[in-house]
Image (cartoon, rainbow, N blue to C red; front, side, top):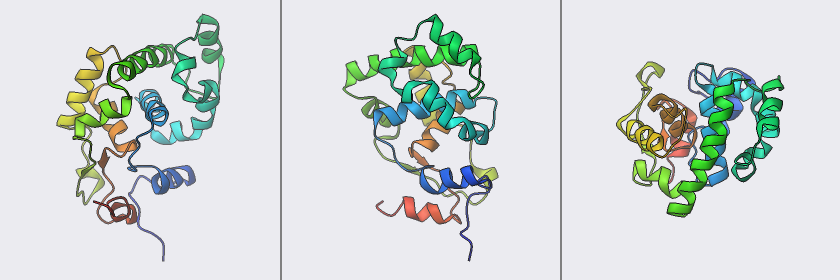
Length: 190
C-alpha cells in the first residue's frame, strides 16, 4: 500500500524532501542558514525548482558556509551571476551575503542563530492539524514577528511568507496534513 503524503509531494525530489526533511526540527546553524538562503531564492518560484538546483546552490555558495559567504567580493558575485545551475538573481545573491553578515551578528549576540530563531515558537514545534492543503496558511503571527525582527537586524528577503516557508522547512511548524504518514512520525515525541 502506498504511503499517503501531502499533496505537493509528487516528483521524486519533492517526495524525498517531504519524507526526510520537511517539518523535521533543525537546530544546526549551518542547516538553518541553508534554509534561509534557499527560501529567499524560492520567492516567486516553486520549491521544486529550488530542490532541482539545491546541489548546484550548495556548490556555488561554498556549502552554505556563512563565514566564507560573508567575504564574497564582486568577482564571486559576477561568477554566481553567470552560474546557470542556480537562480541568477542579483538582488537575491547580494541578500545572501548581507544575510550571512547579519547571521554572524546574531550568533555573536546570542550564542547561536538556533537559539534566536526558535525563540519565535517558544523553542518548540507548533503542531497544526490541517486536513486539506488549502487549509495551510502562507503566514502566521510567529512568521510576522520573525520577519519584522529579521528585517530590523538587517536581513533581506525575509517577508512573512518566506519566514513561514522557512519555519515549515526547519520544523518550527509541522504542516503535514493529518492524513500524511509523516504527521505522526514527526510528532512521535511530542
